[in-house]
Image (cartoon, rainbow, N blue to C red):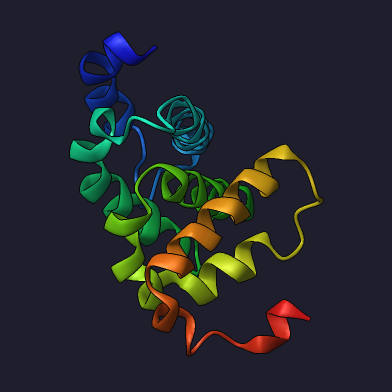
Length: 143
């Protein structure tokens, strides 16, 4: 996968639409999910994915923060942000205050599985890089 990331990622990113039409929600969901899977393959070599992180975060955070986003799409966006945090925590960590509350809320009801586990590990790496980034997150989420 790594040798072709630069070739395919721009097309994948374009499918992550901040407000997809109803007929495009599944495509957007799949693109967000695939991005998280690609991120997992880049753990240990962030240079492959780093150039794409700003645009990905822009699109994923817009989905996550939009109250009109379909629940599964917001969940996929949150998981993918967490997985990107496994690869590029220092790049994403400064943005924690913008999305941390919504991120926690989106993953609140997801059952425990490998995807949620990897997302939370990435979230913890972002917190380690910017502890003050979660100072305004409701502690009720961590009970």
